[in-house]
Image: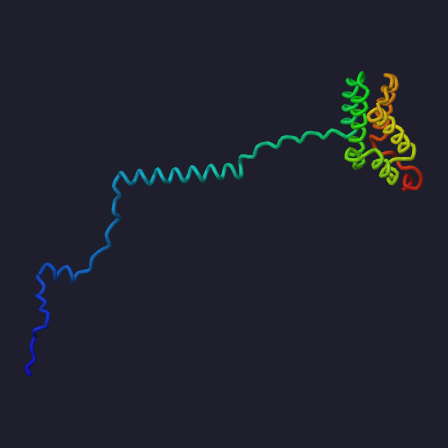
Length: 192
């Protein structure tokens, strides 16, 4: 068999211009200028991102609102005195007056000594009161008498005179003033 060139690819010889281009080294091209429309778009996007970054940095580090001074908490004895003063408006109505005065004293005892006074019946409260050493015996006896007198008006329909109601009020106010601040220690603790 004879060899044939049927499947051979014939490449024409290069021309003079093409040969010169392929043989010589080409230099690097310079920067391609952007069309003016795209340049303004990139400047606008960059400015928007820069502004957003500036706002975030300002809010994070530099813009601190001055802290408002915290309201001075009102001590329990002052709140109790205000409640007792408000109760005087009910002096002509014995039952609402006694409810207001006893509630003011119970709330005061809860705030000042952390008793659970308002949530309990008088008997439950007095039972817990006897177990505590936060009040002295005279104060415990006073509270027993005071709450019993209030309960007579609230539940037994006792109609006290205005003088008796004022006496209840001044007694409650006296206990609040007596226990408003910690009493100085007496005995061994005072010397230490």
